[in-house]
Length: 69
Image (cartoon, rainbow, N blue to C red; front, side, top):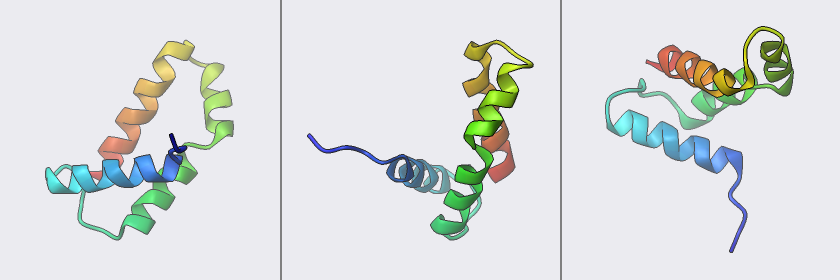
């Protein structure tokens, strides 16, 4: 069983989002770069100071999804 890279998962999510009309039609590489640079380990460390760990993934997901629409 092979390893799945984060970039592969992000590209699938972008494609599905575009197919569903949720994400704008823009180059995959550009949208992927936005997501990868927004979700930096330092962001997660900073958010841990302000919210419970359980809320971090929901917060980041909501921000990324709304930013791509």
